[in-house]
Image (cartoon, rainbow, N blue to C red; front, top):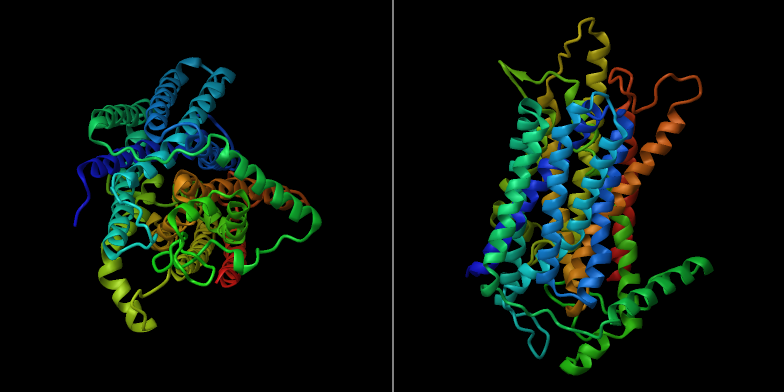
Length: 520
């Protein structure tokens, strides 16, 4: 059983988009500090805010897509905006050296306008493309709303190849483009992703006549009114101090997606009539209860997203202060982010062949591990990654402060374990999150389901920027000359920050397990 040609084309297009995005995002903190002359903390906050905005915007655009637009048109418009943003970014990087000053106001404005234009484009592009790709599976809803084994395998195959595709694109973007940017200049380093994205748009458009268009149309204001009703209920419960999970008897959410889809009737276990089912799914109070029940789990995943902001910010600056040469070849610090992707690509094929069979033996369950267990394992591994990061950074500081020369003796390869651990963590948690949120919303709002998953990383990015601001103010004064995020890497205390994230993530994991227990 394989995927259809349109489905494969969409996955390839998504892979190219990841190449373009990572070609910009992976080394952006270096561009901001070395070219735009921003401080380390300011650059990290700018990258976090940009990533947060990029991940949050899909919530709004997905709502409009499911309410008023169709996915194919949204993808086309968004992709054109995407190319425009990349062209503007490339032009800015080429013209920057000709301005004659370190930080010209016009160049800074152009830089951030181009970056946020890319964010706006991604807001419609990513969730719509993934939902559109799932549409190409040509899976029909059964009258009993039960997924047969073939349907389940098709969905699993799609999500696994989708993730493999975007990981492959990410790996090329991180490794190849960071090297080109550090050695051949930022103009060429941004121009290549621009050209690649333009070619992918043309390829996607050429396949228009082969695609399956099966987006369900609902009343235009229906999803909007549902979300407004949900927000009102959440705010009301927060104001009254009575926010809690709704009663189980009205629950439409089922954690075990593969055994009991969202559309199963929970009132006595009897199957619902299809017409009656759709009525229930589109009822605003039911949707608000679904989102309310997902809220604690969604919140508990935010610290996991904060941890995943470290490779593109402080891990990269950390690597820049370590020994990076192999003979005459100097390793770009952002290139180590490729270790995360390599870990993902290596483990993905082994997950079903090795991890699940071992899990079946240990748990004595045919499924091996549940979706919740999979996500929890990944969260635990992210905590271990932060502990390892803190230990390595402590050793780097110890060695660097003992050196009288400018050369740092600790090799950048000491950072590999923390990158690899985050990659393995990604396979468990992020893939589980994609399947989880996609399955927990009505069939007419699948784009919103994808956007909910992306929003975890969006809010997590904003939290990361907020934490940097607070910690910088708390650790900077009181007679200290430097904060934890000092530009002088001999004075910075990133190890303390990593310990803080490890402790906070432990509390987040406990909240996650508790919220999931309540959902069961």
